[in-house]
Image (cartoon, rainbow, N blue to C red):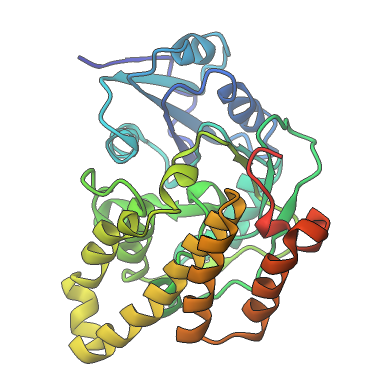
Length: 326
């Protein structure tokens, strides 16, 4: 069973449809919706897909009281199915996939719209991380403000996921639908696999400026926390990505295999970094050393050295190694 509530926006279709998959996020979704209401660009609608929540998420959305917000309820089917349902419901010319526990800067939609050129598939820019208990206006723990590749980004995106999630990206709706849906059978990296299919369709633009578009809440119970320390979590997405016939045709089997080895080194770095953040320093440093050996980098050598010195260093020195929720 599923249902949709909320009046559609008046005066025709909005420019942006913000798709918000939501599962047990009652304490957080108010900040996400409030950040939409505060946008300097008012031509938006939000489709909140409540994916079988049991904590009052639907009540929190219904209480928000903005006709531009629509609530769609479905039985629990996972984040990919929720995003796909939201895409089906969307009426805008462009899409933004916002996680329910994050929020947008007030000028985020306007800045992304301004950067999205006529021939561009998508536009994206800076984002920031905040503690779990933060609210709009909080000082970020750290900001990712580039450098961001633009134009044809397929190869750099193959090596690593350039996006934390879809909240700092605006996508042409026509291109999003041509790319197809998110894969429900891939539980980790499903967005990365989708962004790559999208990137094969055309150019990505970058949003000027270092001010974050998106604020990402670092939750101690988040899916990333649970899965990023397990190397096996990466495999379904990796297999789907590197079996993509468009990519095989573009790069050829041998070069694609070489790129995959580079990507596996990047994944090893993520596993090691997250293990360190979870207090498993010795195990994490082993993964980081293996990654560094496979893909040497002066910057990562410095971060690895910091991982050994972590107990003696303030968080501000290497914020990427700080614990979740702080």
